[in-house]
Length: 240
Image 1 (tube, rainbow, N blue to C red):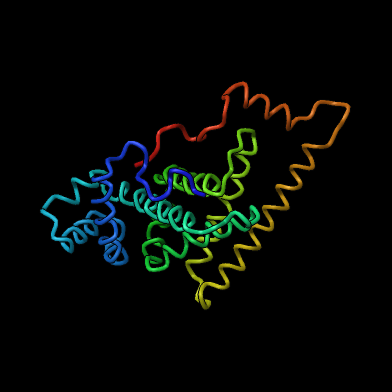
Image 2: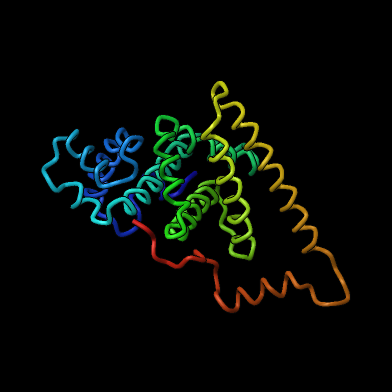
């Protein structure tokens, strides 16, 4: 179950405007491999849709920056919808996570070059914070979709570990020419297996009793007292 996030616009976004932005982003994707993530690609997409002059600027006043972040959220929403159509109740946690990542990559297969151009753009120093926020939103959606409702310090560790999995797997996928992405699936399985080992080791470390104070529990208690229930470490403002 993916809850009430699946396929819906981000909080505070007008559904009608979101639908128009979806159409424009989808049309612009054909031009991004040639024009990059730019106002030119957006204008070309608008022309393909016979939108009036100025529509691209009206829908994406933030230009390339807003278009890149919207494309990432566009992929996230479709991932959630695809995952919601699957019966994942009988799967183990690592299998649910792998399925979510694979669903997102399946959605992006026709737009591989647009993803490559987007990651190159996000790799620029001035765009690094946006890149981190978008990656956080993706992994947060995945954990929420598979039923994670943790409110302790593991909220952060789970998302941090999965961010490494999603980032490295996406980079591997960009150059994967294997049939049906078999090599990417194998790579993803190995990365998730590594994360599960790390998570298990951390859980064992938390359970070790000693005569002195447990630093992990102390840190967790400090976070609870200072911040309460975990929320996005990047603030409550959701990117639209």
